[in-house]
Every structure is written in structure tokens, then in C-alpha cells.
Image (cartoon, rainbow, N blue to C red):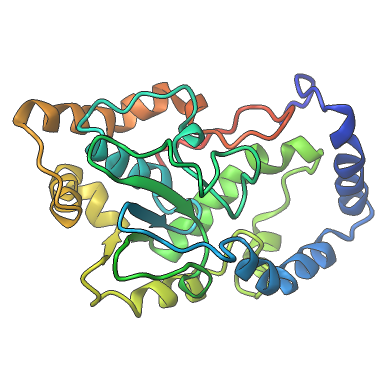
Length: 268
């Protein structure tokens, strides 16, 4: 990955240099295991003290499993096809990553015309505050597809830190262990699958969504009890298409200061 266009802010340089040094010394795997080991404590901290309301719709999907796609579907339904933004995280809190970058959990401004607001999280269900008043949507993807998609996403995600792409074997070993910093597929899936019978929890299978996105747009609308006109429905369908979302990829890229745009909207 070319890094010549990455302008790293002065305050970020120590962290970036630390990460580059760790991986160049061959300590990357040990560092990843350390992060994963300490993830349990951090997991509970992200939503600490937050009380969900009947306005909250959580898209709780593991990374590279249709997160932005489901976010876009839900958001466009909430705005009846008129959701427009320069940066999606100006409307959507993401407390487990974009702290002080995304809009805050307690900021009242993201309420849509339908009365809902969207919250993004990649966390397991045990870390997310559950309420009978709120709605929760998760998308489950085949683990092989998740792994391949994540592997191709890695250069975009970690190139900022000067970390080179590692071999598929290295990432497969991490994926099969508890040291996968992008989330453990089995644990995340099991945590939300266990809640599938709750009336305020919607579980979507990624390949079913891919096979008939329009049907699932209607299902999400029914789940949230949002009524839209045929014209509004067509707008939601258009703005939830791969072509449209790809054209505004920069509006979804979770950038930190100085970080280049990530290719988050991919076909695989």
C-alpha cells in the first residue's frame, strides 16, 4: 500500500511510530494477543452508564459483515429516502471506535423524521445495553467470507500505521484463536443469535440480504414500523445499492486525524 499521501499529525506520530516499531520487530502477533486479552474490560466501558431509549436502533454487526449496508438501509428508512450527510458519523454514534470523532451517544440531534436514531457497534451482545424499548439488528456472514473480506480490507485499515500486509496463514491463525482484534466471529455470532427470538431483535443472514436486498429493505421497515410511500421506497432502494454507496465511499470511511480514506464499500 502506498503511504506517501498519508500526512500524520504531530500528536499522532508517537502512536504511529510505536505501532510500526512493534510490527517491524516481529512482535505484532504478541501485541495483537495483548489487545485481545484486554478487550473484555474495554468492551464493558464503551456503553457504561448509557440507558437505551425507544428511539435507539442498534446495528450490531461484526466488521466486514454488511455493517455499512445495513446502516444505510436503516438510515434511509428512518429518513424516508432523504438521508443526506457529508459524513455518516455526524449522524451515527460509534462508541466502540470513533470516540470524540463520531457524534456522541447523548447528543439529541441525530433523531430522524421517523423519531429514530441509529447507533453502530461491532461489540458482542453482552457489551451492549439491552432494552425492550430499543431495536437491535445484526447481520451474520459466512465465516469464510468474513475472513477473506477482512484480509483484503487489512491494507486499508492498518496502512496508516505503516504495517505491511501479512500472509493469509498469519491472519488465519489469529482468526482461529482468541487474538483476532477485529472480533471473534463465533462469540459475536453466538451472542446475538441467542437473542433471535426477542421481538425487538432482527437477525439477518448476509447472503439472504445479498440475494434479495429489496425484500430485506421491506422487512427492516416492518421491523421498525416505518411507513413509506412507493416513491420513498424507490429512493431507499437506490441509496442502499452497491453502486450508490460505492460512489460515496468517503462518507463511510472511519477516518482518524490524518488517516487516508478506507475502501469500506467493497463487493466482497
